[in-house]
Image (cartoon, rainbow, N blue to C red; front, top):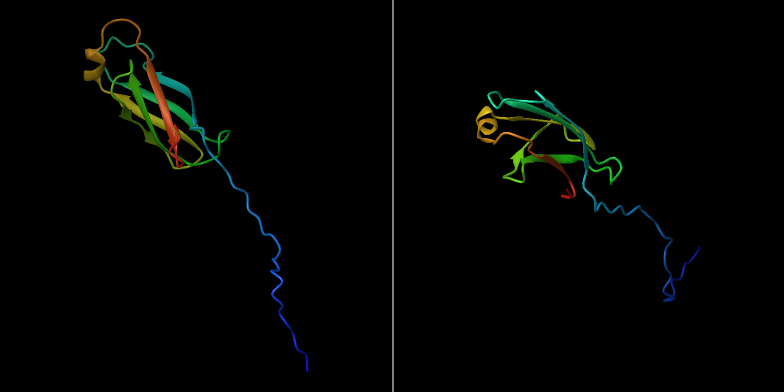
Length: 117
């Protein structure tokens, strides 16, 4: 017969570990294409772009939006929820018609599951 004693020595078990990943940067947006690239304002303009969180946390991209000249943001469609996604949207002809002649700034930003953009 064997007897095991437990003494109140405060023994600790072995460490188990896991990687703690911080994602403080949003996805990068690149490869922006407008179709048509130059418009007279009478037709809608298609926007295509790529959003990637592969280099900044590898989290899934879950949202994207664009603005024209810093105005109200409009949502963009994602082809999937993944760390690298294709983005699409259409600027309506009515919005194009309301813009003045000349250059305008189109800005796009993306958001990952950590809600960084």
